[in-house]
Amino acid sequence: MRVGIREFQPLRLAQIREYAGVTKTSIANALGVSPATLSKWESGHQFPTIEKLRALSLFFGVKDRFFLKPLPDSSERPAFYRSMANATKLARQTAKVKLDWVAEISKFLEAWVDWPQLKLPKLHAGSFLSLDDRDIELIAADARRVMGLGKGPVNDVLLALESSGILCAADQLGFANMDGVSLWSSLTNRPYIFIGRDKANPIRNRFDAAHELGHVILHQHVGLKSFRKYYKEIERQADYFAGAFLLPAESFSCDISIPTLDSFLAIKTRWKVSVAAMIMRSYQLGIIDEYDKMRFFKGRSARGWTKAEPLDCDFSFESPKLLSRAFQMLNENNLISKSEALHSIGLPAKEIESLSGLPRGYFSDSSAEASISPTIKGSSGSNVYPISSCS
Image (cartoon, rainbow, N blue to C red):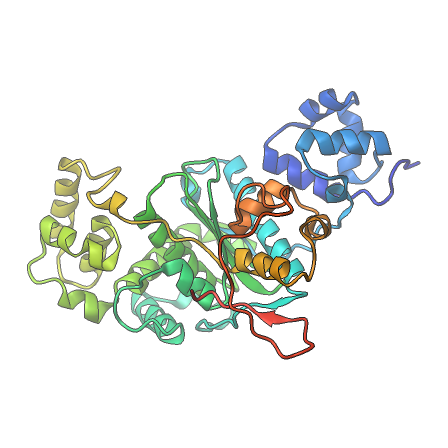
């Protein structure tokens, strides 16, 4: 017979345990219960008592409500991981949970705000296997057209993504081999992108964001089985898309007169992409051949540019703004207090702050103000406000 708090959500325990990377035995020992009991909690065959629930909350540093809030239904859509081949299972689990939490945060905020309308090219279901490089070139060009980016350099990739309706988050992940993750959430039917900042390279982050945009557009209808079977091709397509998106054929080619490492470096500040990406893009466009490509990469390595290139530190990190502006709007217009928002969302406060781009301690200090002021629009008497990502 199952005893304890019947509102307890077993999937929440599994979620945060995987996120924290701790074993059932470790948790059981800390709570003074057997691993078998913890397994029953996680499977739903038994519920913890109020005392054990509070001990569990204390162990993970969350409110009791976290374990009482149902986990949104999960679809069979896969999450796409940048550098998945080198990432550990824990890194993938952590990134996936973070992005799921971003979706939950945005779902809560939808009661008061309207996110920007999705402005992305649409592909038919199951079409990714039939795409060749020429198709991806056209799709990348169409993405720039739909997103209103013109043919020049993209000044701020995350701003462009958010302006097109993609909810983004950027933060330290704790794993240097995980650069980013993206998914279409079944909770909101909207795409989300998380960018890891563990490598502390703003230029790489821009390419990571464009890579994940490639997944969002090209692979929206890819199922888990196809994702596992065609992983290498799916990643190759996203990489190709990123290059075509950031370095459009016509305008980028005009900036390349005589391709050399130094000429690539000279236009790095303009295009905000790595020399490595420009070498690869030049090869794709036929500006250089296979021999030149290999020669440039060897020369790049000889100059010690493999881990970091010149000018990398001259750029600032791009930061998502939509979520933080939405919280700022709620606070400034007295629509809901910080404590009520924290209670309703039910996620760890520090995670809501970091995933939303809020100042550390935002929810613990009732007088704290977010650092970004949103532009609020809405008809009189309406409690729903459109939020713009534009500054």
